[in-house]
Length: 181
Ligand SMILES: [Zn+2]
Image 1 (tube, rainbow, N blue to C red):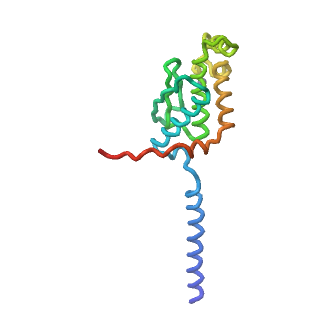
Image 2 (cartoon, rainbow, N blue to C red):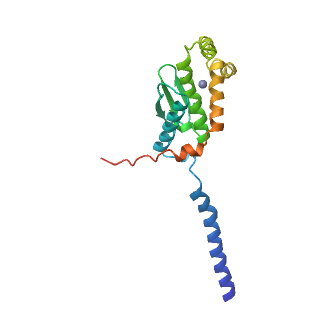
């Protein structure tokens, strides 16, 4: 009887340790996924990323950001031509990678806007497409395959491929504590 109790006790102890190891270790070492971040931390990540990409694209003006939250609305971000701002739906972003790709795409539209009047092959291609721009609700394939959208998406995919996303996460400062007044 005593031995059985002792064994049972040890089984409980070992079981507890194993469960702790399985549940707590990954939680403590794994960085938070984007949807788990606080609103402030999400905004910080997107703001930091926008400044970074704008600098890399040598933009004259960094786009202004407007944040909102809607899990029902699938559009993640939209760029408003010439107004120099990007609407960002924080509720629709499922990962850091997605956030980075979508923001790189939208910021590239701002770069295109700044180069729209250049007397270069790139500027001419932008202007030609601008005059016949196809909206996604008109024709989804036509929208994806036009120069302006292909250029933005190609930039975004290359950006995600080259950048260390975790490095951006690490360099995103923690939002400051909000003190109640
Ligand atoms: Zn686009």
